[in-house]
Length: 606
Image (cartoon, rainbow, N blue to C red; front, side, top):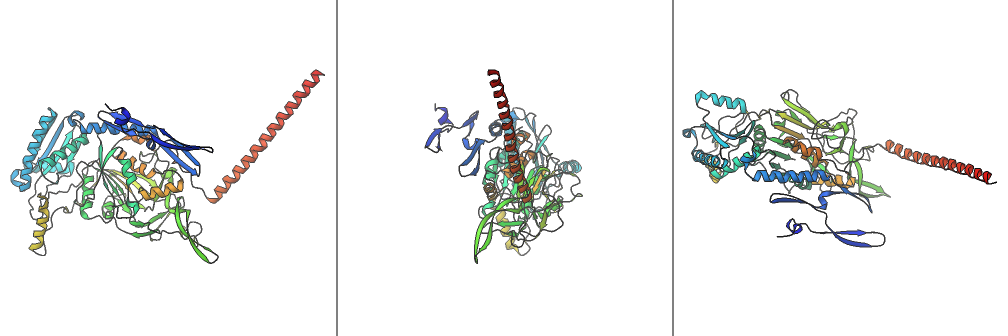
């Protein structure tokens, strides 16, 4: 049997220390191991400490919220154990599989075989569950279509089409039910027994209280500018959930996904929009961080307008992402390339200057009543765009404004993001007289109406309009996987659907976090904390929400004007002088008292 340190991968870490007289290296242990069943998680010193650099030789080290780290590790281990164990034993109520399937004569050939696979999977689950699983198979077209009408009214379900070349509609919807909880089972892409078993297993895990959740991440690839990478965000999310990358090019969200996280989308096609729409219609949770601008950080700052592909979809739900950028004088600093002329020579240098495109949100600008933003000290949002809400379209939804800029902010529809301090010495940009607060993040939940309710599913094959050759190519392409394309449009979502929209695609990227960390001199992760809070709120995990965000050093000071800085400076001088005067008066009084006491003693002696 291995000793515990080796079993858990605990090794001594060499720490180098230095003083005025000597330097040395000490091997030390600084690890916590939390074990549950056969699984464990190790927390090293990098997970438990927080470092703030104030300058050369000025290094401060403190514990970084150990309550959250330990609670997170315990939750992750218990959830992982539950999700990998007997699902039926972990689910409180018996599970019922509702299968709304058409008669075999109306099903396409591929789904006739899949219908037999469904019966096999049901038999296997009934044997494994020991009486805690049952199936209810119904034909919605029977009984004069009353069931079909009820499914449409309750869940927004409608008949499917194999393709536009085969217009015969059919039903094949699956839903797991346990008590008051319902989870739809999506049809697997392979339409075989193994795929169906995996889809049902994934749905069962979503019925387990506290099961480990799965997040599908849609983000630009590494070929874009470095800010498109979200390694820090992914690493933080993987502490509490499974993260699976996807691009939605097939028009489907991966099976078993609990939350869809879309970061900085660009030019999404109809299939990708359809995947997001239908995931929301199934009662899914969607977090969207999007911007109508593409920001480039190569050598110099530049911006160009680029559509996300979600403008019409968001507008349908009552959220308009305006094609403009917000500037706020209450902003963070940014290393900005500037030009300086000395003696007729031109020099380019990098200076840390206030950058209005980095809105620094604090106090009333963050919604203190909502769990996503209640625990945040402040938030820096890079290159945000204004959001507009349509009260008529959002009347049936619960709308919460999460983050707004200050009342001194304004918008600019151009593409110039480099400051010009020569012409605008105050802020680097022209500022209009009219200013107002701008909405940059909003949360919506309730029953949404599908954008594709009156449109054909983009997953259906299009008939050839130029000749038989194109139709043959389309048929050959569809046949590469050996499966038919079965698609339907769910027209409305259940009340549990949630949508969070942030009007910045880069605020949680690695580049933005690095830039702000350099300007503050401490690790800055508030945008990542915001995303984690939004994930926990969407997946209803209030325990971690209460503990997260209690960082000791990442609490930046309120931004001040030059006059305020001078006022505080002179106040410090005045208080120091007043303190010296009080000390002098106190010492004078003490000295006088001592003299009186000495004179009294001498008088008694004489």
